[in-house]
Image (tube, rainbow, N blue to C red):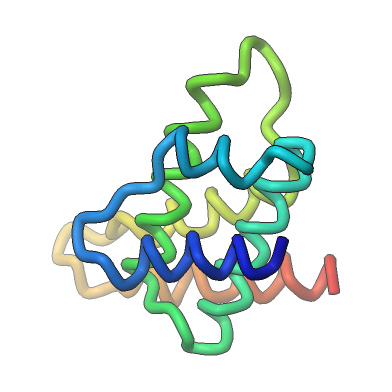
Length: 122
């Protein structure tokens, strides 16, 4: 499974404009529950972000793609955790809170949220 996750992360991070689609997810979840897939992939994205392997922009794009695929198939089900918390951490870095945009949402929100999530699961 890890090599499949690596392949998907590589595809999404090295190919400009490449989107993670339902077909990508389906091809990787044959042997897993969707919950395990989404949690495993989001944790790996968070780890690579924390280590500086993937930049914030790529991580946010991956998480947004995964969110779009997942939400399309929830049918009233629950969003898995920690996938949801990791998605929220990258989402928190997407917008400035100050009108003059002198704040750094990634530094102020995303980084500490990712550190806390990973500290709780590792």
